[in-house]
Image (cartoon, rainbow over all chains, first blue to last red; front, side, top):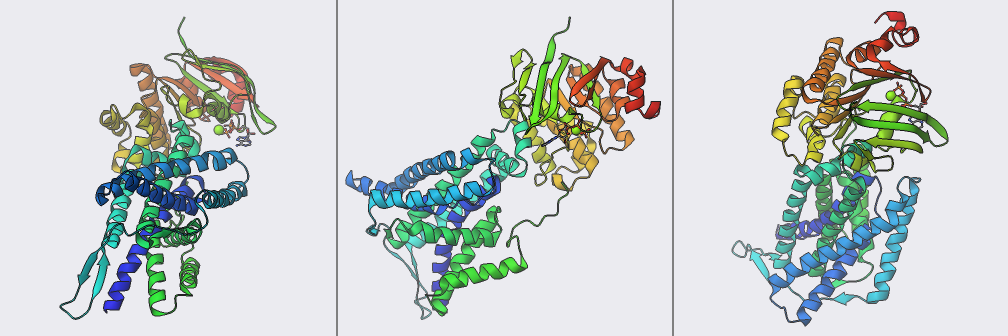
Length: 304
Length: 241
Ligand SMILES: Nc1ncnc2c1ncn2[C@@H]1O[C@H](COP(=O)(O)OP(=O)(O)OP(=O)(O)O)[C@@H](O)[C@H]1O
Ligand SMILES: [Mg+2]
């Protein structure tokens, strides 16, 4: 029982990180209909940004952790968002309206570029971060079992839930969110109503990148190390999460992220660590056989 | 002489290598209702979209309210108090009726949203009943009402309507034409509309144009065109309607 609870906590933490990244895949897919394969690497850039900003803050003597984390969060979000914007601007926008595979190829190129760029600029070796948020809580000592929740885990889950709530409200209730959904559903009509489609698409990349950078910061705090390659694996997992939840669906990305995190953790805990990725992908395959549009994806029923 | 609202001169437009508009001249004065009729594939909808820069005119010029908009991006044109209910209605299928109307009001910064919403519900009570239903599940006629209401939500001074009566029961179509006439008389709304329902449209209009194969072949006062033999033969089934 205690083992189960412990794994549940670990799985939810991991799932939060996947979910934050998955939102970027799903929003971009929704609005431009392409998989932004460079998104995982934008997450990686975000993790590096967080590390660099944190070290810089320490260097200038800001060591009060809550303040430092808040500054890191904001600065890393802003800088990574700039990367997201730039990627869209140079790799995708010029290809809008060309054949369908073109932006996909460009995305893969962008992904390789970002990896190599970070490898060159930061070195290929793993970069460590000393524990920033120490401590945790123990439960159940009285009942005779012990479950640990670290403060980092609490921070990750709380931040994720808050950001997801904020983004859900943005997409559902604000003018920007409506413009995004309008571009998703009928780009030409949106422009007839005064929506600047290019700008709206740019902002979508910016939002996705900002969330990915938060995921990067969380990853850094949780694992304490980053390298230029983390974007690939995490990107594939988050992409899987987005597809599992139903690509294009915001709640789907969150649910998918959570599920992939849980599956991976429980599989490692009860079966074998080596096959945890196989487990995640197998479940994806099985779900897609029965629900081709994912768990919360939309089946086509409207008349248009 | 009345002030011009829209002046189109020698406009051509292409889909790839195919010319859809072959040198079109059209004038719409402020406060006028002008109707464009023509056979299927004549280029009417293309002209409506070309006014909005999508596709852009290759030659010629489009001047709207004293401003050359020939090369302006679509979304900037849409912010000049000109609105369109386009061919095929193009309701956002996964947005509610209310959200569709909010999309229409976006260019006004929602300055008089509640008031305008009430006006639309007075004009189309059906939309009020359906306010939180998703656009894609509305009936064809309800979608048509929503498309027109969405265009009006931007408080346009110039309204483009591409086949507003399409798919509507005759009674509702009549109501819509009456509403357009009313807005024109009371608020001075200038209207440029494309119609298959040539009889009603020409009766409503001050002036009309006939388009054949990407060019304007006839123009004149609405009722005058109705009397023309070639118009009656081609667009009014020999006078019956
Ligand atoms: N997106 C497009 N790509 C290629 N050709 C097009 C496109 N849209 C329209 N056309 C062609 O341009 C011509 C004019 O089309 P348009 O839609 O303007 O006609 P219309 O007068 O509105 O006809 P209808 O009364 O049937 O609506 C047609 O021959 C049509 O096939
Ligand atoms: Mg047409």
